[in-house]
Amino acid sequence: MAESVLPRSRRALAVAVAVLAATATTSLVTPSAQAAPVAPKVTQDFNRDGYADLAVAAPAATVGGRAQAGYVAVLYGSKNGLTTSGRKVFTQNSAGVPGTPEQGDRFGSALTTADIDRDGYLDLVVGVGGEDTTKGTDSGLVEVLWGGAHGLSGGTSLIAGASAHDGLGAQGRLIAADIDGDGASDVVTVRDQRDLSVLRGPFARDGSGIYAGQVVKDPYNSRVLDLAAGDINGDGLTDLVAAENDAEEFDSRRIVYWLGTENGLTPFTLVYDVDGAGLQGGENLDVGDVNRDGYADIVVGRAVDGYDSDLMHNWVKGGRIGWIPGTAEGPDGVAAKFFWQDTPGVPGTAETGDRFGSDVQIADVDGDGYPDVVTGVPGENLGSVADAGSVVVLRGTAAGPTGAGARAVSQNTAGVPGTGEKGDAFGRAVHLGDANHDGKADLVVGSPGENGEAGYVWSFRSGASTVVSPGGTISFGNTLLGTTSTKAKFGSGFAY
Image 1 (cartoon, rainbow, N blue to C red):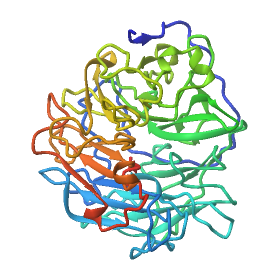
Image 2: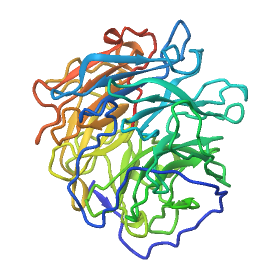
Image 3: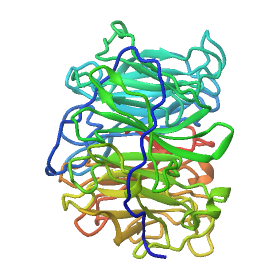
């Protein structure tokens, strides 16, 4: 099949939904009316040495004999890329980290980064989606680990769930961003699966001085699946974007956004397609200016296939990603482009269960100035080996992503340690960051099914024409970290 480009026509009128607004939040995005040189994301430099660090989640890991208590591992960047020396593992048993490891806490269920106390060092914000509090079972908790000259250390609690099963800080429902433009990063999480809860920064180290924020109510029976942030209309303020579905109808996947203003978030708006209906979304997304026109674009991954809507959209077979360009009026769903494994140039063949689009990330991998799109294909079969998994990199251009020159990486790729095995799910999570400060974003891949679901992570050094540069690869798991391997599913997620 050819790459699908929806024709441009009159954009459907945006439908706003009434919300409760109180206060606001903040981010690190600057106005860019014209395309400027694009540098890879360095969102995890916890010790401010100029090299991106890496935080890896294992929320299913056993800690102190308690299943699914969870931990977060951190490796630091250097001139040679990520280094295994100085690595740290954080749990709720770590010095200064609030709480105690308990069964089902899922410490690390979501991770995001920002300098929330404005001391010049990025901090790691950690979701504990299964934490039991005085409000009830699985009400959830959001904590912070503080960045400093020697990396992360200590922490404090930011906010707890308001009721049982609130799931505050659960996977895909946590992000830090400056949505009101006051220069302080705020923290946004999700209550009751659908309502945004915004905490206004800056934050004090002892947990005091946390300003009351904004609660954005969703009047529909929605479920937020993933959050991302970026300036999608080029006004210099950071906006929020979400992949959602109907809580009772999983197939009803949509993309919504809230514009950032000096007074906080606006009511959400749906991204529409050419027919004036809600554009079919997916389960996860990222935001970045792929075509360098000064407006951040949305890339959404839809990995789950086999639902009724697939009958109308054959390109969903095996999973797809969609690119939605930003404009001065916001995301243009009419101009969306879709890519799947039958798109010319994209490695592989579209097959049911491939899960192409399982995770998406945007950054400039090859150093040509255009951010590229990376997506996981954890259900990819390698020959007769089922669900071994792979990762696909789509090049960014002035016209958006393209299948031309796309590259794939798996455990069967030359220079990649290991061998693809059944159920490895290589590519279930992906990450991009410039660990060696050479101007190219380096690829990190999580394989939570590796070694009987112990999990493993690979970090590659990018080159101008390759994702895997000779001598630039490291791989690690529970043996290096000294953690319990049983069903840990290490590499389930990364900090963004």
